[in-house]
Image (cartoon, rainbow, N blue to C red; front, side, top):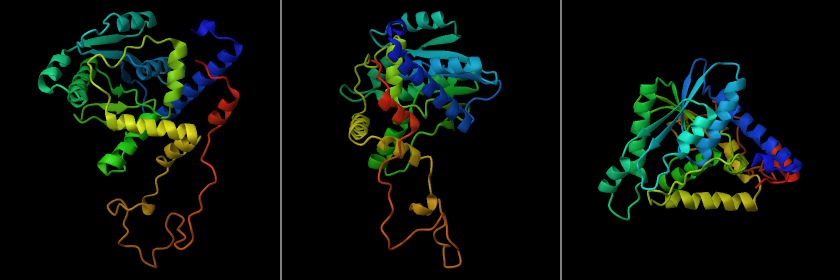
Length: 302
């Protein structure tokens, strides 16, 4: 695919590749995701995001000022029709260390979940436990997942709309078994960039519908809402993502997070204060980063 691009398309792809590498490198630095001597287990599902994550981490490893190792891990859950040869052949061509874990979770899920009900919750719990165990067996110090910026924002809205919480996906956390550190190197990457990157790189994508389970309908509704906003209001998604990186607890309503009860006239102005009777001053347009503005002059690669 790369060889088929014309000069303008190659220029566009080079900018895209640099942007993704910069975004991943910045996320790693901001949250100290990868440290000297780490062995990172890259969870490879066969989708565009995990393929992109592996490709970018391999590129950064070659030029990083620290030494770390990568091992790609795929969980073959024995869904009917799963193309078992695809990932081993691809990973062999890269020359990277990898492990294919074979566990028949498909049969367990089909046995436990009534027909017509979504299988994603149980499947996810089983998969998580197996991957945690595999990380320990391989001596990995970090587990890398392929969630990107849009996944993080979608989760924020899901928790707001359905869970009543201001909560999203953390870029780095200790796993619920207490034994692993999980990282999300794509936290600053846009899904549309990853889609374009996967198209041009021609990753051997494996569809995620092999088990017959439908995607979570609530998440799909949120995704469609955000895509509509992105079309109609350029820059809105970027502004929202900036907002969750600049949280001001004194201007929210969580009295467990901020001590409102002790505020009095002697407290002084907090976090710049607020004009109680004046209407809030809002920017006339949402934030647009340099890359978004550059895209106006770049031919989109398909």
